[in-house]
Every structure is written in structure tokens, then in C-alpha cells.
Image: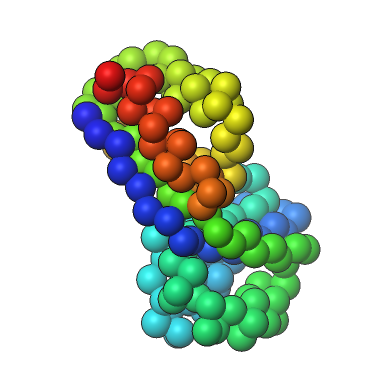
Length: 150
């Protein structure tokens, strides 16, 4: 149905062994952002890790304080920041019922030499959201447009 995106995000990634068995870890991390009035756009996660995707402009003035508070409250094994990220969304009705659609998206991006830095899909399966380097933003949009719309 559509392709959209926006540049200039930061991804703050935290990993902690056994995090899935520890109640309140995600809440503790998110509460740090809430205290600083920073809205979190996405929270992609995996086994024993979680990331928050936030506008760089909003997080930059508070970054070192945020990292220190997360370190103190959550005690992660690692905490990393990735800047200069663009978020792109491929949106389509009934995407969940079209096998191979995500494979086609990522194959097209890979063939164009675009590295995926983050992947997130909502539970409604209406969109696939992924992060690329800011420098690859325009090319990612062009590749998806040529692969799905043209």
C-alpha cells in the first residue's frame, strides 16, 4: 500500500543475560526515557536484548545521563548507541497473508548493498519497519518503490 520513512534516529540497545526471566527490566529502561520526557518510537527486541528507537534530536541532550541511569537501574551486560539511523516502513494490507513478502523486501535491499540495522513488525502485521543508515535512506525507498510499486 505504501512506503514511508524518516531520518535521524538513534537506537539504544541493551543486552542482559537472563533478561527474559527478570520481571520489570523493560519497564525500568523505559521509565528512564519517560523521566526525561522522551517518547520512544519503537522497541525491537530479541532474546536477552531490547532496543529503543528514539529521535536523535530528542535524546542527544540527555544521552550520557540516560545511559548512566539505565546502567545504574538495569545493570545491563552491554549498552550500545547507534546514531544516524533512518527508519523505513513498508505498509500493506494483507501482508501477513502473502508468503515471502519480507524475504522480497530484504533480498532487494541486500542486492542494492543496503545493510539492515534494525527490524520490527507490529502484531497486526500491516507493516514491516526497518532501520538503515541515514546515507542509505533515499536508496532504500527507491529500491522498495521499484520492487513493489512500479
